[in-house]
Image (cartoon, rainbow, N blue to C red; front, top):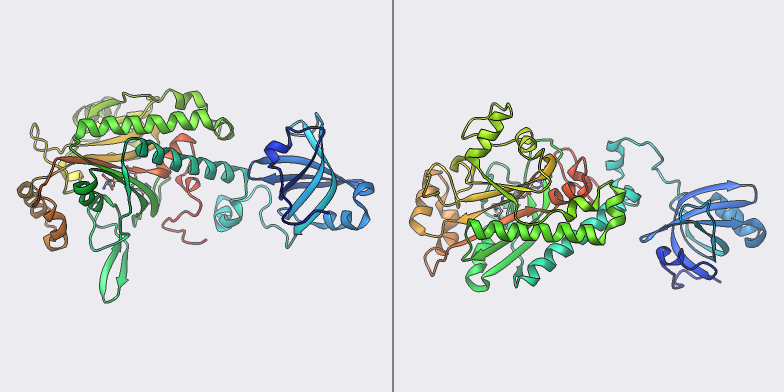
Amino acid sequence: MLKAYTKPTPVSKAITRTGTEETIRGWIHRKRTVGGKIFITVRDRTGVVQCVVDKSVIGEKLWSVLDKAYLESSLLLRGVVKKDDRAPNGVEMEASDVLLVHSGEQFPITEYQSAEFLLDVRHLWLRSQRMISAMKARSYLFRYLREFLDKQSFYEITPPIITVSGGETGANLFKLEYFDRKAYLTESSQLYAEAMIYSLEKVYSFAPSFRAEKSRTVKHLAEYWHLEPEMAYFNNATNMKLQEKLVSSVANRMAKENDGILKFFNVDPESLLRIKPPFKRISYDSAIELLQQKGSTKKWGEDFGVDEERLLTEDEDKPIFVYNMPKELKAFYMPINPKDPRTVLCADMLAPHGHGEIIGGSEREWRLEPLLERMKEMKMNIDNYKWYLDLRRYGSVPHAGFGLGVERILKWMLNLDHIRDAIPFPRMINRLVP
Ligand code: NSS
């Protein structure tokens, strides 16, 4: 007799064991009844397998319970694995026993649903093959990013999520009530990561960042996962070197270890295996020239939007860096470029084929006076940054760092149309539930 806690064989393993009797545990992915037989496709986290339940084997009572069971019912099934060329994996399980754990109500998702409806029932849509594949890739991506940095002797740090001020966008902060004061959800953990290089030297934080982005684009989330390494004695050049090594490493591992997932998304693993340092580096000045040659009307000093990012990367197979942007476009902590004081020592990494910016990084102004000057120029509230300025008062050191948007990387690697499928419960201007 099957029990709910009977130890199952993962479906992916069971399908390799033809001739033996196996127990699998999962959910009803598909179902159809033909005469006295019910064909059930059972899904678990490792795969799907077709099973056939014969009335004459299983008995009338259990058969009719299963006949009525809804899609997505949970069950355990025991049976012999047999070769069958007509079945999807070339094998079929002939059920000798079934335990229906829960059938419940009719599953609301049927074929051909609108994207909006699937977002409304996101908590259930996560069971789809598409979301299962995307969420596995996401988990692997988190692992590969961490493992790379751990191997490079970084320490992982945990920054606060509640802050009193930002550093990046200013206008896009989410406000919240903090007892009797005003506070904000963090838009970047960088300033706290900077505070920790004075003791740990090479650190990274891996945490959500929040941006009250009013724009509805395919690459903006209001809450996204942000990997932010920060390194003492790094400059713009060594910063870029580390970034291209990191991105190549995770792209290569994604390709080598997840053939099935990539194929599901019609991505050729070879395209990710080709990601190797060095990446092309172009200055903002040459980027503007290139854009103008390609017919863009962008002038020096203007920021890039979706169209410019596409034009710059349409013929690229690897990500590229655009470095030394105009200071007006960038945050207060970026040092002025001594060779051209209209620009700062920074670099953004753009993904190939128009997937957009995946990394923003820079050197940090590590000297007190120039930093203060820049903050005053930008009319910032110096009081909020007293502690940050202290970092420049005691044993300050040159340093640099960057922020990588995990969902942006996943959107690129899986060639997703929209960033929302790179995160289980997307937060966007018009989407807060579920
Ligand atoms: O604003 S950034 O360009 N840079 C920073 O926040 C720095 N303080 C990071 C640092 O140096 N520690 O954001 C960094 C990256 C950017 O390149 C994107 O990949 C991602 O964060 N990002 C986003 N992803 C998804 N949705 C939104 N809205 C978003 N904004 C930035």
